[in-house]
Amino acid sequence: MDWFIVIAASLFAGFVDAIVGGGGLILVPALFATFPNMVPATLLGTNKSASVWGTTFATWQFSRRVRMPWRAMLPAAAAGFAGSFVGAWLVTMVNPDFLRKALPFVLVLILIYTLAKKDLGTQHTPRWAGRNEILAASLIGLALGVYDGFFGPGTGSFLVFLLVRVLGYDFLHASAGAKLINVSTNVAAIALFASKGHVWWQLGLAMAVANVVGSLIGSRMALKHGSGFVRIAFILVVLALVLKTGYDAFLKA
Image 1 (tube, rainbow, N blue to C red):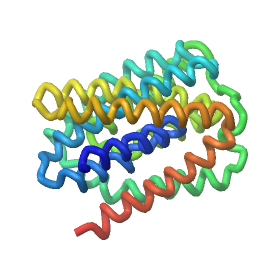
Image 2: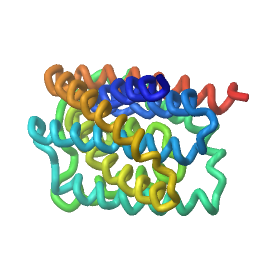
Image 3: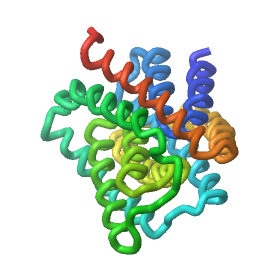
Image 4: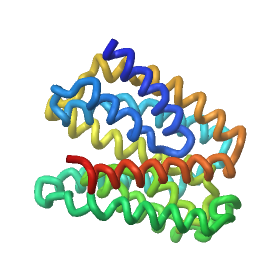
């Protein structure tokens, strides 16, 4: 029964992740609630070992239908991979608790800005080209890679927002690019967790299958309905993140 619960959660998480990110809001709490006595690092590592497959398949789905800016996104993904290791190292040097209380307010600002700018991300009009686009994308990948390794919550949403706001992508292209960067940061995280023995591979494999199924469904919906649909999903995910991070920061005992 326990496995059925987390596998079902992984299916839904894959669906949400494929559209705009935020699947961790579903799967991580489900794992912690179902296996309360398990070492937290093992649950987090197992979550990554499942979600990376759904994100990989979503990236593949998007790349077949959306013109992926590979020249900019591949360096950004490499920067994100390196940044994730740097962030994980920083955790051993600096306590990330200060981010816990700041995060809800940052997310509220992103939500307000997105709602106020009704045309934000509806048109794909890249602001940069050539080396400038590569540099800007790589800086975003590096910064969010460090954040993901150091703290983590909301990484996918931050990636989508920055690709829309800074690079001028629409929500569909931004979601595609964010997925590629997310794959690289997840692989880095899995390598770290696995090196410490913090991955429950059997459960991770079962959840991965469900995550991929959910991812394929979510990708098809996003590609079918376009940037407007992804924008609405983004707003809902950021709102959920505001509530979750606000609760964790100020109300959770």
